[in-house]
Length: 369
Image (cartoon, rainbow, N blue to C red; front, side):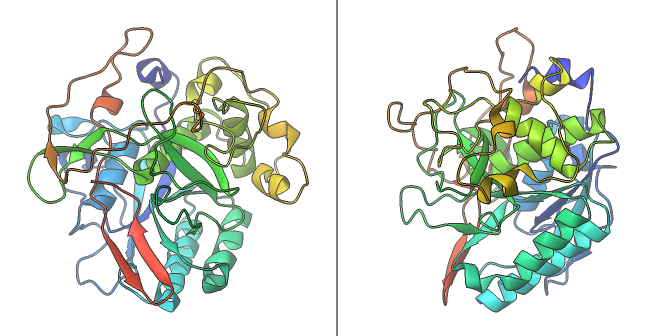
C-alpha cells in the first residue's frame, strides 16, 4: 500500500466518514478529536460516542485512528468519523430495514462523503425496501456507500444487505498474499476487495490487542482508501472516486471482470495518489450501476487496471482466518516492498463475529474471531 508515501500526498483530511455500526468510543487514545457528535438510532441508552461491543470503534480506528497513545494507526488518519449507532442484531427484518434506512439517510444529510457499513443482514431483497430507498437518496446527495459482502462464503453464501442493494459497493476480503479469504461471501454484487485476514486491533472480549479479521475490516480499509483519494481530489463526485477505485484495483486473475469473488479487484489507492492513474470520467454516472444495468461489464471500470497478480479462489485457495476468539498477539510493524513501515496493517482491524437468527433475517457485524 505504501502508506507512508501516500500520507505525504493525502491523509484523508476534510473527508467525513460515517460509520454505521455499534457506536464509536470517542475516548480511545487514537480516536480523540477524530469523532464527531453523530446520532444513536438504537434503543440503547448509551449514545453514538459510546460502544459496548467494540466493533464500531475498531472499524473507526482502522479508518481514521491516529496511533496516539499506542493506539491503532488508521489508513486515513486525517479523516473525521461520524458515528451512527444502530442495534440490528437479534432484531426482526422490519426493524433492521428501518434502522439501516434511518442511519443511511442521516449520514447523507450530515454530508458524509463516505458511508461505511461493516455489518449486514442475510435475507431477501423484499425485506429491505426502506434501505433501498435510503441508498438511492444518499447516492443522489453525493455519498459513496461501502458495505461488507459477508462472511458466509463457506456456508450459505447468500447475499448480504445492504451490500447487495444496487449502488452499494460490496467489499470482499483478501489475505496479505492477495488471496480470497475462504469466508468472504461471493456473488455478482461484489464490487471491490481489501485486506481482511489476520489483522489486529483492540480485543472485544478482554483487554489488550487481538488477532482476527473479516469483511468488516476489508470494508473499513476500502472506505479509508476512498477518503484518501477524495481528500486529494475534493472536486470529484462519489461516482468519480468510485470509478478510479475500480479502474486502479488489482484485477482478479483470469479474463472475467468483474469477478464474483473480488469484483473489480483489491483496492490500491496508491495508484491514484502516487502514480496519478485513473480517469474520473463523468460526474453523474455511477459506474457500479452502469455495470449492473448492462449485459457486459462497464468498460470504463477496468480500462486502466494493470494485469498484476491477484486472487484466484480456484487456483490459490486462501487460508481461513484465525477462528480463536480474542487471540492475544504482539503487533510488529510490517515492511512492504519498498521497506517503508506499514503500521496500519500491523495494527489493523479485528473483531469477533456476533450473530442472531430471527425470522427471515440473520444480522451480523462482518468480523470474524
